[in-house]
Length: 148
Image 1: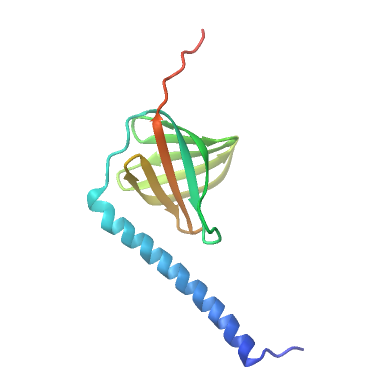
Image 2 (image 1 turned 135 degrees about the vertical axis):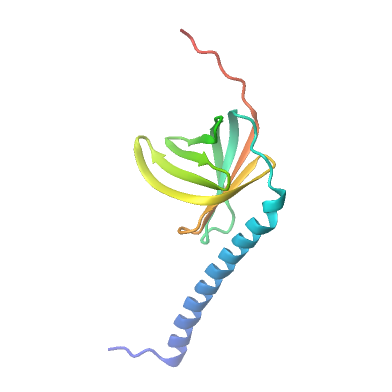
C-alpha cells in the first residue's frame, strides 16, 4: 500500500484549493458583473429573425468556442437559437432567462440564469456547469415568403 508523501499531499490539497478558489472567484466575478451592469442594462432587440453567433466559455476552455446560429426572437420574450440539430429555447423574463436545450425532440438540459443585453449580445450563464454564453445578433434577416 502506498502512503502519500508530504509533497504529494500538499500537491493534492493545493490543486483542490486552487480549483475551489477559481470557482469562488469566477462566481464572485459573475455576480459582480451582473450587479455592476444592472443599472445600464439595455432593452432586447426587436422581434424577428437574425443570423448570429453563439459563444460558450467553460473553465477548461482557453478561449470561447463560437459558431454560427440562427435566431428567432418573438414578442413576449420567447426566442429560439438553432445550431444544426441543436436548439436553445429561451424564455426571457424581466430578470432571468429560462434555457431549455433540445436535440431534435429530446430535452438535453434546462437551467435558469440572470441575463443581460449588451447592445445586440445576450449574456447569461449556467452556474452549475460553470459555462458562460454570449449570443451575438447580426442585422435582422428579411423574412422569406412562403409558397402556398
